[in-house]
Length: 411
Image (cartoon, rainbow, N blue to C red; front, side):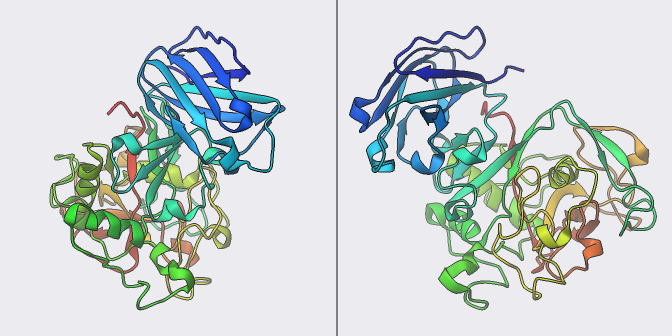
């Protein structure tokens, strides 16, 4: 797997890097500090990100909002350029000792964050090297309304422990949380937030669709100041509402006309977005940590929620910068429900869950895994390793979802 290539430029220089993709022949024109133009040559298609520094210190993303050109996006090979409107973003400062850090990310190892504009196309997708580079910051309201923000999870080549150890606090009896291991071949993106009511409605209404907000805890019935009710997670969405009646994993793609396929149709992609597998969900939730987090700090649950959902992102994030992985609403996973979650303790490769479908011993394809606990659960159910299941056509107000996306962007 190719690695990102980074160049640090002071003024107008030539930068050659013996790796793929290559950024070379870079020139920087500060244009009297009003606008900063950067010209560069890219050897092959890649994602290019930029960081501006003044006297060796990062200017900060809050001062670099007005970027245009070939930056924070997939960029084709050739001579390319980007422009930063320094006067608009930093009107009270003078850029005297400017330096520019350009990074070329291979398509199979893209930047850590991806922002997908609802109603936009694939060319509108933007990528950011770290959360400090995200315009407005990771908690900006646009990423809970107009964009879907994803974080890449470093999973490729890792074998991780799933399930809980005997004697763990809150552990369910039997083999429901039996310890086992999963091995991942690829990184993947997962939503920083649970999908909000605002985001759900915008996807439904795009391209002439009808207004639809199925949520029980909506702004009309449970109003919050500044219309913040729209920032609550969407709930009362069934597995079928999201991806249709097809029987994953035998038929992998979400069916046309349902929410996930509508999103992909708007963007102009296919087979990119979906619900997480149970293994993807649990690894992302754990943040690679073995111990459970402080539930009061990261989750809305029975003791602190007031028995209602809350706007996403109000609690602390986990190590992977993900919010509300525990509490608020339960989240759908792709997998069939099966008490033998550990598959006899064997290491699972790129795990897709059990191939045998059970609902408490009765073979069935109708029940799917749900994870994370919800606002009305006791703390014992709001744990990284706690598991539950639900009929795929049920739409209850404790139930929401977050999305995953492929970790390689060569689509």
